[in-house]
Length: 485
Ligand code: NDP
Image (cartoon, rainbow, N blue to C red; front, side):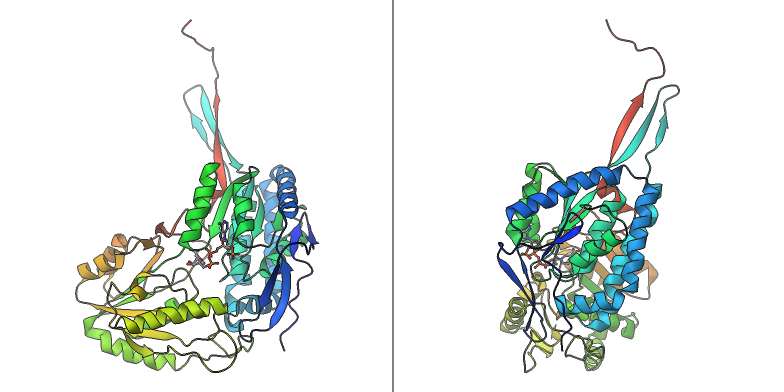
């Protein structure tokens, strides 16, 4: 039995749930069975307009509060999220199909971390004083105004919190549009923040497909757009935002390299490759999907990996013993199947998985290809599914050059016991987030984001503050004003 996941209403605007069935319906399908579990409706133009009006008004009230007061509300929201972690995790599982075993530790908890971290920073956001030996300058750190957040479907709670927490800490208001695939979780974030004391209108959730997102991006009331999505959408959204010279943060896709040297701890390296390819059934932007293994350990690596894959428990993600769930949608499953067929057609060696288990749901086995070459489609394009490509290499210089030979630059990892080599490799990686003897950890304290086509800006950490606020410079004259005439 799937627990009831029906939301109170489709949207959350100006501090309350709002229903309006005029907009096109969006079905919420449980990915493990194909059952319809809820339905929401796209926001009409009038609803988008009311969300932006509410945000504009709330932002002024919020920015007039002290950072301490704002921080207290964010931290209270973090506490409520943690108290409700189980219910929120069940909802996340129903919304996305990710195993409850994962969502219990990775979604509302990560969202709560962001609210707590940025809530803690809110009171200490300051400008600076610059002495000019008489005259002086001070800077004020000011909010941007209304921020629009647009989310992908893989981490609907986390993405909403990763955008809302720094935006609100800096004194902005937010209008967030979830992915049409996963509309449910962000509503809970807005409800919790409101319960914690956020003024009505500070966080608004509007449902819709790309067109609703596009409407938000081009609205004159909006000062900043933060998107998590694919590179093609990022290009469109950044171009639309550029018309109004709006600030942007772009968290986009990747095809990240994970380089494993002969001297690596083999078990750790296999664990890193599993975490970097099969967590959330491979639907993670920073996944290390090009696994470069030095020739000396290639066969040992593949043998150990095959052994560890026997531990994958595929099934209903609401069952806490299951550690590998379905793809989010039938459409995404088809994309993954097409890539697997391409891998086989282009001559890669399928060493594990590749099949869809019998029965309903968007399931596909964790899949590993060996003997992959750099020019194969599965080594060049982001699949966003559980497909690992193993490539072999001889030398460090060769591995680095091939790792960087991609238009993406989100993440990169290296497994080796040689500390000099590890630091040489990360210094050479063209990627925003690098890992040494670890993979895919994303604590809120650390900046996260991409280079090259993988994005602009950084989420999390103190670095995010610069992307959600701007400095105003105030020059103060202390003497007589001289003029040429
Ligand atoms: P999409 O790019 O298809 O969609 C992202 C969001 O943008 C959705 O809410 C989508 O709405 C919306 N959108 C689509 N077109 C427009 C438009 N013209 N204007 C405004 N908004 C628009 O990505 P997916 O949802 O398919 O997510 C997968 C992608 O996200 C992968 O490439 C992945 O790598 C990336 N990603 C990046 C992360 C990062 O932090 N770097 C993290 C997670 C995912 P709708 O859903 O209705 O299409």
